Image (cartoon, rainbow, N blue to C red):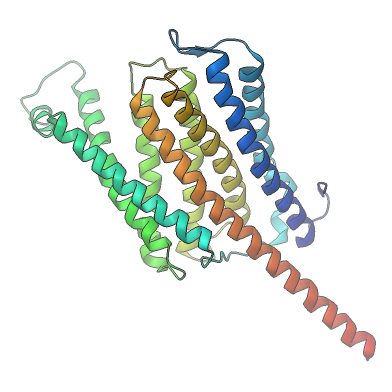
Length: 316
């Protein structure tokens, strides 16, 4: 299988789509494995950085090259091919991945509520949002509190979104409304990681998870367009964002969880976001695979129809 760059037909676009998807499936587990090994072989827990080593250098290069490669899909997958805007939601993989993501988000909601109660955050919020509260960094303190509250609400509404989308025929309007909350949940994760001043700004875990969460946000934004209307759907953008988000979310999720449970990483909040990325990667994979199948079936049907027309003409 090879790239077909100059041709603008749908058959060539389909070949490139299958190749991109196969590469995503191949390199995501490989990069996750290499980065997990790198935590054991070249990660210095005292300073919080990878030392120069074969595994850390290789996976860093792989992350950059693969990310650029997936973004190159805008070149290799022609916009003129007019890909299908339909996704078959009846696959068992979509049902199980969506339900699993829904239950995980409910657990995330429960965990956040438990943390707020355990740390007596409600009294803290009442104190900092009081007009009498004055401090040099009052704006930042209140902004952080708003992010925390938004994360709690986004978690439970994201769970509702996944349960709705687990249906074989999800309600488009409700799915479109709830579809903003996975984006908000990912955005909250990016904000919490970014504003964590206890960890260096260029810490590898920060960078990995921020890029993964941003890719997940971009994917859900593209998926949201499918539920708004067929006119707003951008199939090519959906597929490219799916490959990129699956790759980064899977690599970041697996390797960061391995790093945390191996004792190399001590930041528990990062582990929560890593698990979120991993769960999202399963859902994104199921949805992207369903899209590829739909495009292939539609393309085969069009080819068969064209062949039937040619046969009729030849008989005449």
